[in-house]
Length: 130
Image (cartoon, rainbow, N blue to C red):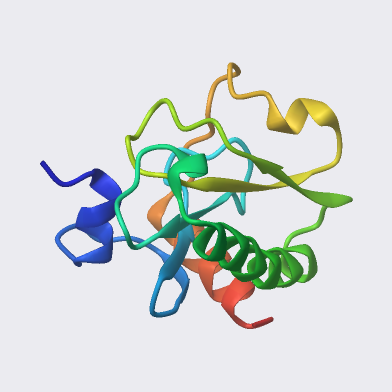
């Protein structure tokens, strides 16, 4: 069965897409830790990040770097944190999280609930810096 991320890639469910290339896609997390939380996903459905081949793993991080640079300009924060957990969705993904402290990467705390309008505005702001 396709993952929720494959359904986003195939446009079966909507998402606030930040950037898409032939092998990767980035979109806002709809249950973010903080405003501007982005997921970077390979289009190839691979469960575990270290099962990606070396080229895809490296290229995904270069793709993520572009997104992080735009995020840092678009969202007030000290840094863009990077996290790979991979337990909640069986499709490799990298979390890019605007952060001012290490606690901003605490995935055990409650998620925020941005409105559809807030998500749309945040996506537009990030895309404007790409």
